[in-house]
Length: 524
Image 1 (cartoon, rainbow, N blue to C red):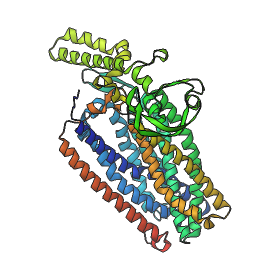
Image 2: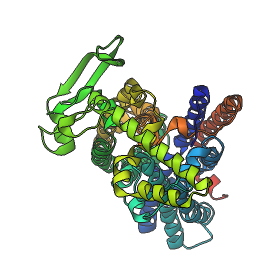
Image 3: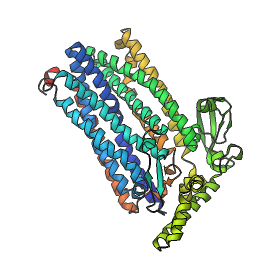
Image 4: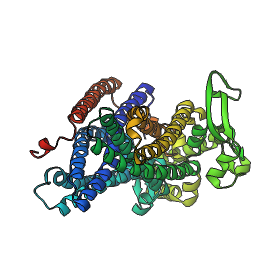
């Protein structure tokens, strides 16, 4: 296994991957949501025959095409980084992680790419029915792409359906269905796509609000807002529901992440739900200097216990319980987990040495011991802890996770209200007179992107120091490459991605200013 000690290499590699992932995710959620909205709009056109709906569909389709084309570039670079910057990770989990990514490329992306061509260029070349089918299949294909990627990510958060092969020192899949149908995978997928649906709805309403402020394309804007607001409202309700389920999975499977999300240092029965709070930059917890005290906090008594376990008196562990143990609740101290992890690593090294020295009987004995249920349950499950030198390394960046989580919740509540107001003003013929709301709709577009970034910050930073929960820490997953090379590529990627983003915004704003020009569309 890797014994990387260059923390600068680890930090720059993490930074480079985070940079690529964040830029890539600026493009993905719009694709997930707007494709279904396009399919709904075209369905209305198919059913009514009203050319206004064709005009509406084709305008939003152009913006989707711009976003889709630029988003592909960042996605390709993201996948290459697994091999270049995270080769030890790729070796350790490649048999499992590679399977859903391969399916995504072969099935979902192929399906999406095939029908997207018909969707863009087949308006006057195929029947209305087949064109509508192509639009729906593009939407389904885009979301299937997300499904397989999120299945892979969920496995990193909660590794299931696999068995470690000590001879090759890598995890191998033994049950595809356990990986695919993992509760973590299901909740992550549903929550992520519903967030994309919300983003696309806000995007359409915000741009339509600009047309209303300019008193241009009034009918076009109102019809677009009607579809997007209904779709967004229903998606927001679904987002809240899936978010609740996702948080419950985190509580059961990644308790340290939940403790960071809630700023919960000391657990207990009847845990309070943190509405909001602010950390002190100066004062720390007397028992652990890494834990900053709160300047203030607003809590709902017993609500966290009830939300997780449907029992107001249920026990919820905090950071200290997970670090120092809680015998009553059956929580091992982190020092015990570290010792057991080191035992697993030492046993693996002993096995590899016996195997290399051709000590067949000894290697078979160690292999049988390593693969026994007792060893797997009590030692290998803590394999990753063997790389940890200090229990405080197991604490994620709590302020970052805490603030990101609560920002996501606060803005998510605004989006639900936003869709309700959109429908209320529109259906009561008051929207044009509510200029404050139209401006708010425009400024809500960057807020929904900010919420997306906050959500991924919680998901990924909250599980640190793990790349694969409990089995592989970040420090052991990095490729042994020159730190300087990573710094250079980080700078290059930052410049390239920023230029791509500027290009997308410029092309989109130009297209928006032109508006849904019918005459131009007849020549497409």
